[in-house]
Image 1: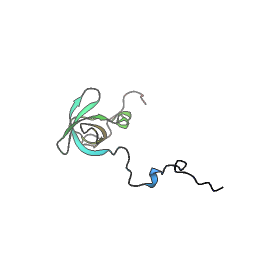
Image 2: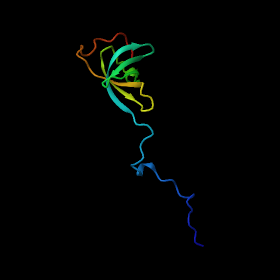
Image 3: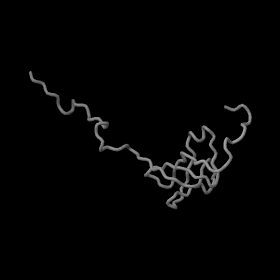
Length: 108
């Protein structure tokens, strides 16, 4: 008996071997400047192409208590599906004091 596998028995081709397939979602990274502080940890950001978006602070920035104020230069990640919202992933260091001073209490 000569048995040949049918097309249903073959495993599907892996996407790692196909460079023409892209990820489900490519994020856009743009630079901007904070121009307004909004409630609930959100910020109004004017991008370098003069578009204004609403952005929130990324989890790592919240975890390490990185504070942002009006006038800070920031880097924002956006999804191509909604170009009015974004996530602040990096705050450029300004000309402020270095170190931030002593910490209060024994918080971890």
